[in-house]
Length: 442
Image 1 (tube, rainbow, N blue to C red):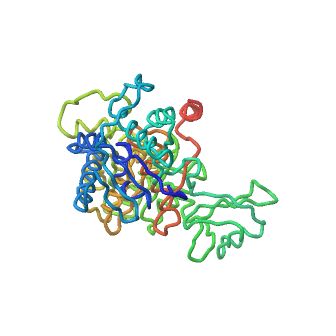
Image 2 (cartoon, helix red, strand yellow):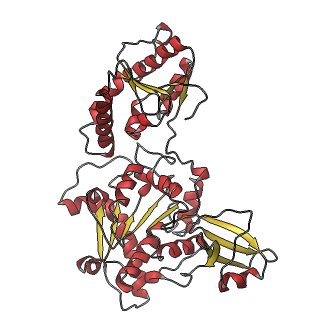
């Protein structure tokens, strides 16, 4: 949010609840927080959720600034701006008296309008509430979304690319690796499809290594972990990343039915039960229902959580059945996997405060997580651990994040090019023709 002249930003409550460090991200500009925002934050501070934790962090940050001076008069920030808590009793004039849907919103709007009337320019209301921004615009002053940490889905790193090569380049690819074209930039571990210029049906799959600056052929092309074979090139790329021990975090994005969770679990079971590379497969997902909740569920903790974890067990059932059909000696039931210590299915709530070394960790439905929650998960991973996050940014049930601000998209974009990370967006649905059609048309 850089500008040529100093501005005054009025912050809505949802900005601080989304990013409790927001007050330190506006560089040299001045910030104003209406007193009603402090009151709204106070209502969230006891929640044992991410929003509650953010509310408590905001309160701590403001309390630390309070010790430097009077918040009502303005406290100097490190980057040159000031922070002021506006305690004035503002009111919209009679022209806008009909706006009464949300008194708290109206008080924030009135504060911004009052500042605009005094300064006549450079006053901006920052809100993540679309309707709030619409009302502010109708009142005649500038309003912006809070875009720090935002990743536009249309511009999200896909993890894959295509290049045209001469027929002779294929031999070089498999012998010593192929240097990429000079006019194109690739990221470390980016997956590449090489297409013959003379015959576009002649292709090869590779992965770019930023250390020697060459594209090397995939090493996991013939794998079918626990009977699950890749059905398209994106799934082939996914297995390549999942089986590479040097990659500690993998993000798999894609619509429903593209095989994200299925491939991740199958690759995990192969490397734990058969290859003995990791001690345990830990599969987790946020406890978040789609649509209206059905209320309290009977039984103990395991009974209550089973409906939320059922999609994971559905994938496990499919993999175990495919593995059994191949008559593998390692064929085991889900109960045997759990009792033998190979597998643990847990809600994501239990991961905070833990240290998890040498485990293969899958976080399903990661699009419902905030960037802070993803950061918390990754900091739990100990030595020898691999973390795989799967999800669809277009199917979000968390009201506090969207397709551009969720932790999964944030991680995929910010970790691109890192030596220990890999990312791929799966495109083609393979669950069924009906699921693929519904995903495209509905």
